[in-house]
Figure 1 (cartoon, rainbow, N blue to C red):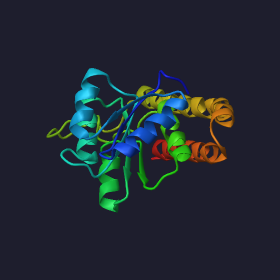
Figure 2: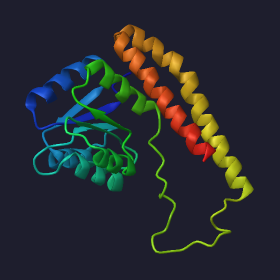
Figure 3: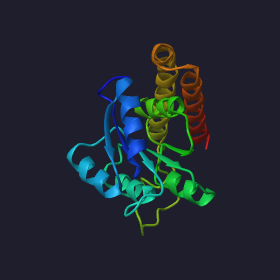
Figure 4: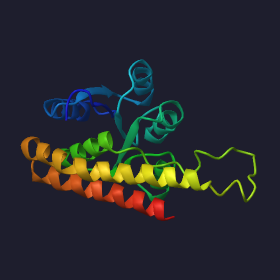
Length: 204
């Protein structure tokens, strides 16, 4: 982990923001904070972040609305939604908008650090609708990718998975030095989860 990984924390509680700032700065991240969604959007327009971690309930623009803006304006930014008032409906909406992860509070800082680190090395969840054109009905032959396209897609996903598996031991060594055992285990749990999702997507 190093300062080239920029993470923004969005929370309306000042104490929470200060805590995240201190913890993640010590662990090598370039940290920015915002007290609400509107402030976050203003700062992200000036300097995009690699990862945005936001609370769900905030005055004005809430976490889901901030995620919608990132989905439309800065899709390369990974988004992690935190909430103590979660529901299946909110989680589904977050996933639909491409959230990297949905976490319930309270959460241990080491665990959150592991998830943020995973977000910096693994791509966002693929949007099932990203290649569809609204209002245009494709013919049956158009829905079947050409053999060359299928091979390229398979190769790309295979390389992504191999990269993640090869990089995991290296990053794991960094966790031994910088994070306690909780963060170490949480990272590999996240890595396994993401690889499983990619394998399932490839199978489908």
